[in-house]
Image 1 (cartoon, rainbow, N blue to C red):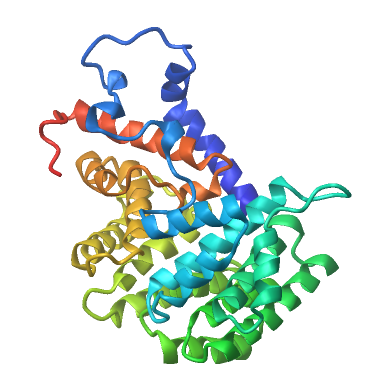
Image 2 (image 1 turned 120 degrees about the horizontal axis):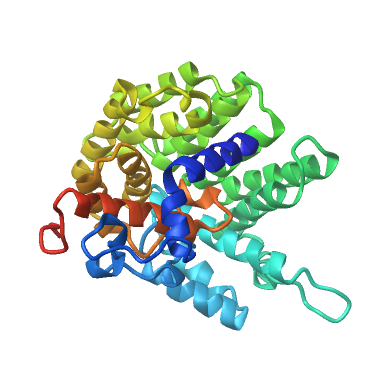
Length: 372
């Protein structure tokens, strides 16, 4: 799938974004004032590319403060306290577990350690050693192992399987420490994908999640990845799963946006269709996602994920004003699909943002006309 993404990116850069990229690199001569290529995202108060935060899809100041403290002091206790005070049923705990695990994995990648150097992420190892019965630490460790497996080894190899087996064992420990918490089982969905769980194995795991958090958006997205990989990218099965989730979504749930994520999972497969982004399947999925963010409960951390994906589809559909309306809500943070699939998420986001601004102004828009 990664190869297909690279090919799609090359085509996109060649036919859609090349003029913009050339302009950024000084190849195109200065454009006259008022030309769409002269549009400046800074005029709308958007953050400079170098200030975009790639760690999270949206703001979570408590998490940022604790991450900064933990990484600066290498003391895990603030992280343990934050997770202990985060409700188990909601999306926020899952996102915070991912963020702590990702921070530890990135530290280890940057400082693998050696004879005279302590490896990065040492605070997580100390956390597990000093507080083995802490449910939050066990969940972070399990997610850390999953991320390490996908980052540092190749699926199907012995190394990958060994790390994934350890992750599965740690998921079990975390689940025993917090029986009502769906997060250990959601982490295991990535293990299920990596180890190739059979359909009965997956369904047993999925029922445990539904018993604890039936409308958990993060869990449904992880399950969607499993179905796409298990059935070799079957668009029909993925759409069926996503549409069923959307159909049973309770009021205020973001599950109504699931079909848009299913469409995104299969873009390399269907993107060859002419006018795809104006097609009925995309239009219907986009409308479902727009409805979901409008009806979402205030403060739902998954709303930012949906808005980021909407920006991608709205720009591709040349629905400039609607793309701008989503940008004003999430600008500044880019830790979400589709940007995280790029080697440089901030640069990828900045390209789409500039296209949205240019298209908006080319159709009569301006900073004064953009609603906030």
